[in-house]
Length: 250
Image 1 (cartoon, one colour):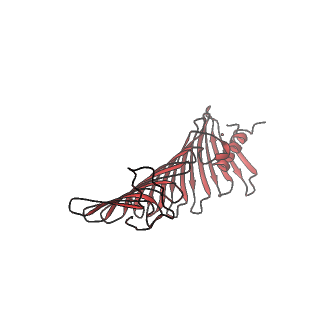
Image 2 (image 1 turned 60 degrees about the vertical axis):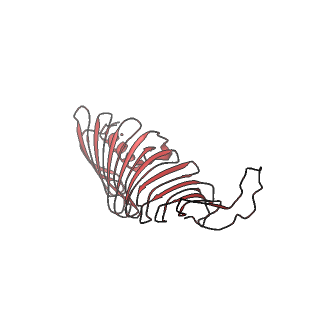
Image 3 (image 1 turned 120 degrees about the vertical axis):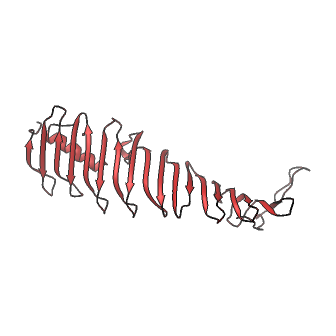
């Protein structure tokens, strides 16, 4: 949005406006017993009254995790709670076919929960770098992303900006809707290459529409709170070549 807001400010200046787990891998070193009631083992299997395996507590499973894995009556793994090799906690629940339908992970200061089959349709709820994020995906590709943070502009350090992105099939942003720290709303439309082509905004009572070539504005339409309108024409270099309506500000 930084470039688009520069468009906005340019327009306002011109028009006088403002802008699993059953592994038998031993631990690399034996654990020292801490008392007579302590059991030390690389793996503990839990079975039901019929002798069927229902859970496995493993010091290091086939994934390299320290894990507790739960099994259904048919012997399929349905849930895993564990620690990744790097110490990050993780949780996974699967459907009868073995597809993960709910997972959660904490990595450093980032945390996320994924609901649904990631290979089909899923939703991700998380906090990434201190920014709350909600994403909806299809076939592993995010199609919608909602965040509350800096509005995609970390350099501006504007906290609390809600931003909604609608993404194209390749994951390219197509539509962006945001509200800045001052409460000004912005709507941006992008072409297939991800270049901004249309920007609409309302800042301090001024409505502005920018039509661009993907790099800079070419037509800028604005209407002030007093009803004064202007239409600016720009060349490929971003220079104003004609202004109709309001006179430029000093």
